[in-house]
Every structure is written in C-alpha cells, then in structure tokens.
Length: 120
Image: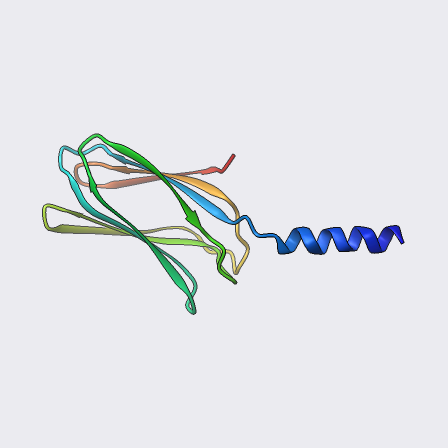
C-alpha cells in the first residue's frame, strides 16, 4: 500500500507543471529599445513575449510560461533600436528536459550579454 501511495504522489507531482523562465532585461545603452521579442517553444508549438519602449538605462523583469510539451530551454531574442535589428539565440538544448532559470539580458551599445542563473 505504501508503494502505491508513493507511486501516486510521484505521478501527481510530475504532472503538475511549474515550468517558467525569468528574464531580467537591462537596457544599458543610451538608446530606447523600440521592440524586444523573445521566441521560445518547440517545432510544433511556440510562444512569443514582446516588450516595447524600454527606455535607456531602464530594467524590467518578465516571467515566461514554459508549459509546452517537449520544451527545453532554447530561446531566440530580437531587439530593434533606431530601426536596426539585432538577434541572438541562447539557452540550452536538452532533448525535452527543462530547468527553471533566470536569464539577465544586458543590452549594451553594440552587443547583447546574457547570463544564466538557477531560478530561486
């Protein structure tokens, strides 16, 4: 009976999904970010997070809902400033094994710096 109860608890806890990624975006440039788009998901299903008008030297935090079957931690970011697009892929590919992380994205004058930390 104890084994059945333990198995039931394991199955129920694995079904509850709290997959999320936290993004902290720091605009360390002297230019407004017109649009910041993050695309994430799988080949069959993807989601977009779009933020607009991020002022120079502003920061914002957003949480991405990662509850997609088969998702891992691959992301694509596109930033538009003064009509110029910059893009970058980041994260990790794990063949459908997901970890909750915090990514700090620093938008500098000519580059994007991305650091990963475990979401607490």
